[in-house]
Image (cartoon, rainbow, N blue to C red; front, side, top):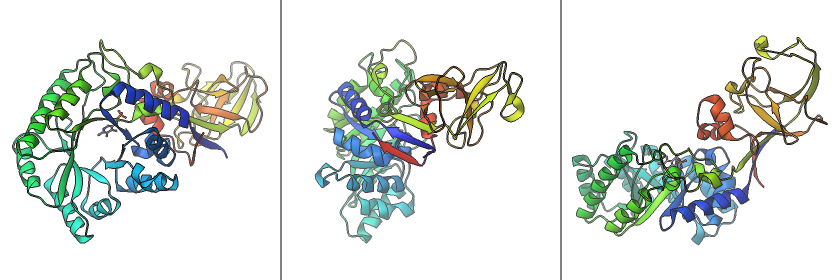
Length: 395
Ligand SMILES: *Cc1c(COP(=O)(O)O)cnc(C)c1O
């Protein structure tokens, strides 16, 4: 095999433990959307459920169905099956499958709940559990507190086919210490929770935030607030962690205290193998446009991965600008020239004994998603999600 992803089940479990410990009495939903941030949901979901996850988060019905199948294939007992929250929108044609599979959709429109209630009647199932999202400042999904929410709550109160299992919101700046935006969002979410309480609609779960909400606890702020708010309506508080499970987390901005970031361990190791080796003389050019010219004799190794696979083109290196690197026999092998679509060239002049077929680490210990992200001008999230490799296995 030319390229594959190894997922450390031990590290995933340890990151999960670290985060749930930091979250304390607040429950934690484990986000496995986007194929578990590129790690492979079929590998990660069973590990997370065995670690104790009561809730998993996916983007859509197709992902929810795939996760269910993976849990069954892994032999997870029925009573251990987690709730599966479908977080990114619900279309009319999704309603019936959501109901059939017992997924829990995030909703914010009356139409969405009408489709679900109709589907439940069609397939002869009881009330459909939903989580209602409140828009407190993302302007993405969610219903706004105020008249719009009040009329939704009044409707849902009388809707026999719908059960409000959760009420949630999402923070826009959870990695910012003492963020004024988060304070504004908290106020609006409090208003929303009161609207449910006033109408005697009692959610089981009240949830908000992400990995950084767990990490950014210097002022013991947001999780303590969430617990208090959930208690107001007799619900369980929950936070939703994704990226940190996989070993990465945004640095806290401002004068904050990070709870977990320093202890997280990257879960993904992306490996490939050397498919070619060659010597070049001083003056020879390497790769497209000859942006790199050998200044002395060099030994180059050819790797069968490129930007089509998720090695960002920004990792290219010219003589004027260093680029990325891969780990060969535990040492850094700098990328030379342009990263091509399916090929990348690295300099192994300083590394003894490199042979054809040798394993190389493209991403993992010694070359993290944060390293790739810094060079590509993005965040680790985009790097791990962007790994397009056919084969992923737990190790
Ligand atoms: C992706 C997502 C999360 C997880 O965010 P991380 O920063 O990866 O922890 C939480 N909540 C919602 C609604 C999301 O879409």
